[in-house]
Each structure stands twice: as C-alpha cells, then as structure tokens.
Length: 341
Image (cartoon, rainbow, N blue to C red; front, side):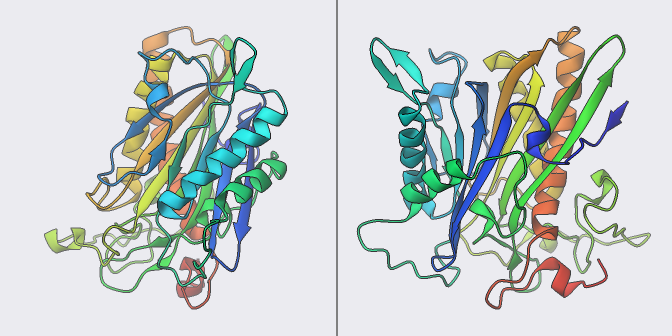
C-alpha cells in the first residue's frame, strides 16, 4: 500500500530538515536540505545548461561516501556562493569529511536562473547568496514554506502561448508499506523555473495531474480530449534563463550506485510535469539522499518501486511548486489566473 506522508513534504523522511532564506529586494533566495547527519547521495543531470558545484564527488566511483547538505539557489552562477555559507555553518559545528585534523563539509549545489525577474541585482562585489545560505541553515526545520520561498522566490514558469507565470518551491511525499518489513518513505522537493510549461495547452490542468494526491494541485482534470500539436512543444520561455531542480530523499538504505539509479528514474518526474523537459536551455538536476534507516529486502524490486515513487513525487512537487506560488510584482500566479483552483 502507498499513501501520502503526514506533512506531504520532503521532511517526512526522518532526519531531513529544510531551510529557506530570501532577499525580497533582490527577488531571489536559497533552499538548504540539511540532514541531521551525513547521508549517502547521488545526482543525475539531464539539462543542457546546468550550474552546479561539487557534484563530481557523488559519482559512485569517487571516494566520498556521504554528504552534509544540498543547496538549491537562485542567482545563476552567483548563487553557487550559497554553498560556501553552508560549509562555514557546518564547519563551525564540526560537521564534515575528516582528513587528519581537518574537517571539510561536503555540500553539493545547483542553481537556477532568476536574474531577469526585475529584482535589484546591483549587489556590487558581494552577492547575497553566501549569507542567504547561512540564514537558510539557521531556519532549517521539519516545516517550511512552499511557493514564493527559498530558491523558488524568483522562479518563473514558461507557457506555450502567453507570458510566464510564477514558479516556486514545491514538495510531495509518499510512504510505501511493505508486508513484513518497515515502511519506506520517499519524498521530493523541487525549485521550479523551467523553459517548458507545466500546464496542458490552452488549459488550467497540470501535466502532472494523473499523479495528484488529494487536492494538492487544486483537483483540476482535463476535458475528455485535449489536442497537443507539435508546436505546443515550443515554449515562450526565456532562452538560457531556466532550470528545474529536484531533491529526492528516502529512509531506505542505499548505496551510491542505487541512489544514482533512483536519480535517473526520478528525472522522469520532470518529463511528466514539464513539457518540454531537459532542453538545451535548462539545467535540470536531480539529487537523491538516503538516510539509511531501513534495509531493502528484495533489492531489485524495492529499488524499482522507490524509483517509480521518486518520479511520481518529483512530478507532484514540481506542479505543487507552481500551485502554491503567489503573485509577485506583476507576475501572475496559477491561482490568480485560475481562481477556482
């Protein structure tokens, strides 16, 4: 049996906390995924224009076994500074990879592009992201805001036929009940700023609608038939100014190679929720974190199930990030455009 987690958030995975920090004047922000202790991690990058930091260490062939945090940030490449702030925060608490007497926190990061959203980007020689990373760590907890929060504050979503709408931060979870074994939790968090559209053409229905649980996306359903022409894959997005970032977490015990397989499968969630996905203009990136609390008995079967659930949660989190967003300085949100949703 599969059910939604109690909070329907990434933090339904025990031992995972999330913190957001924003600069409203800059119209950008940072989201930090902060485990209570080091976690096994992997990453899969499918976008043609990624911006990342320290993801090579997540390769299963590399030495490092665990990481200490993941950072998602606005600000394009400037936002990678946020990981430095998170490293300082962790080092002050003696958390990181030990090398003799030195401790080096391991903090992979990925960014999205929000430099053209109208905020004040005249920050001189000190972009705000390092400090925002520290503030996000200070705010980390089991409950966090969706929509116009953290890395989702300045995010936008393209549409096929009209101007962009507000993107945002979304999350979703599920619990996989196993016969004779502990239940496994799989959850996702997404910062949603894609070149593609999250809505079906000429519709208020999310591409991710088949995966909706309860009314987390407003409960809209398509008409009996919606035509999708080849041209509907051509978005009105800002070329080069995009990206969907996803973090999946589970309490299952995974190796780095197994986490990598789930990251690959979870990329399907982006393709289910965004059309088109993985374009030359996006930096679509999926991280997977394993807290390693529960063993998986039938490795191949359970791994396939968890990968499927990770993709479903990613699709739900992406659509929910848009659904939960609010208007921002003239940029309309989904719920303001479709008020009955």
